[in-house]
Image 1 (cartoon, rainbow, N blue to C red):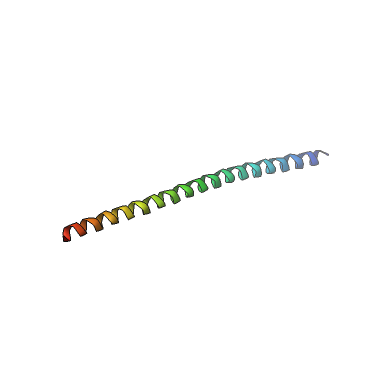
Image 2 (cartoon, rainbow, N blue to C red; image 1 turned 135 degrees about the vertical axis):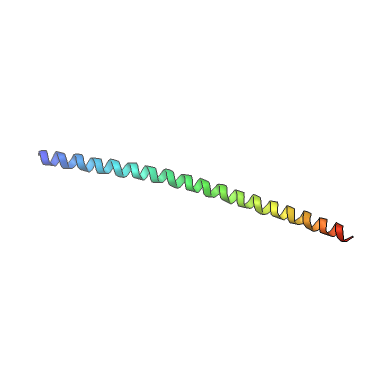
Length: 66
């Protein structure tokens, strides 16, 4: 009986650790997804800014040619 109680306690500890690990990994995944979304938005912003700068450069070059 005592052996069974020890085994159950050990199994409970393993279960608690596994749950804590799963919770930590879920939080890490959430943070990584959030960071990925931020990077995607930033990438789109930079692409837009690049297009604006390219258009201004082309306009300036056209003005110089006149």
